[in-house]
Image 1 (spheres, rainbow, N blue to C red):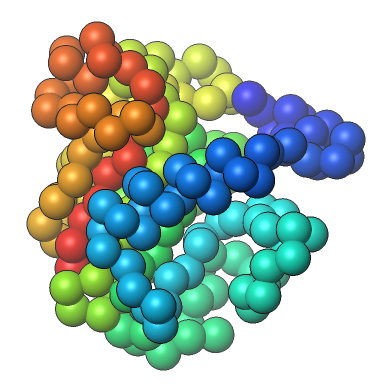
Image 2: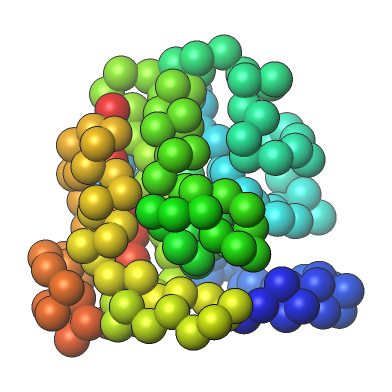
Length: 185
């Protein structure tokens, strides 16, 4: 999926989600799994169009993920949730030609905005193969994503989207099903 893909997709109205399915998934795999409570502050980082058109009462800020300090104090959030953000679909440990971002340099900055004991949770599509076709979406290995988050805190959860634990590159590639990885500050 190149940038042209995303430009076309959003020009055609964006991604279409089943609100009931999404609500149920978030309830089970975020709220319940990570014991979120009413009053917890959660940032949905890189949400695209998010849920604004679906009646959400959340505050939406259209800005670069690199500009969090403009809007929030350090240690403000209980959780930063990042679902499918393009940065994580590319090179993780070097400057990406497409995005101009070195993700491994940016991720530690996100943790400044998480309270001690809080979480950064990434939900990302990957088949764990390590295939990185040209300017297209990369299928990063589990070990590459673990290496990205280990310096930031304790990785407390690694599973596919259905909740099946993934443990290493070979097992993750066999299980498939994409990734949810949570790192505790």
